Image (cartoon, rainbow, N blue to C red; front, side, top):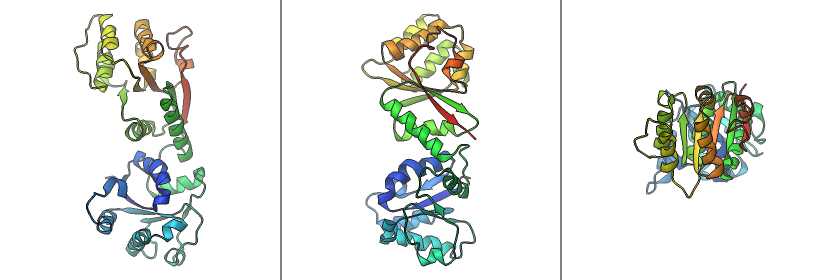
Length: 303
């Protein structure tokens, strides 16, 4: 069962909490309990705060001057500390986000707190997520930097080769990008057996966009079905996990890769985010239809 973590924070820190902290915890499998996810309009704030907070296994308290000046935040802080006033159970994680004087209920038991006044401090980030029983397989600042690079490229409609080494949580990273920034990003997994033949691969791509149709089994009509059915007028975002496999499996199928190039470069109907273990420069031979395509390399280097 996933741990449930309640985050107590002031709204001056909401951008950092929503954009950095919550995605990392969720990528590690944590069930995050927080106001913007759990609170319902039309119900009393304090009652909802208490009900949601009581469901948590762990409590993260994000300290700043504004936090200590907020009656709602200090209410949550005292309720959290009441569950472990001597800080012996490891269920309360104090985080110093901005310099401030910690309250006596923190100073007197003197727990180890996480100083994250520097958001690029990988050691302190590791202390925080380790206390939450999370491991992303990569330093958090690097995971977030990779997220930001992918996001900026997709906003510019730039196709990307995400090169992954080691075992970082890259699929969770792509899910986060889709769920929080690009809801129209379709993601297909090229290890799925339905993609092992060309008509099946085309069907999976079309189905990812909600397009249901019978894909012809005879070439080149299957490829024509792909180009005919994908809508014109706007770029579609296509994420492909394990792109190495499609290159290995269809390495002699020049028509397939030429069609992908046509959709990306010539007709500008697709922007692709292709995750692989090797960069395109090593996957594709020279003069391959995709080898000369302008695609940006972004690396996610696991530990």
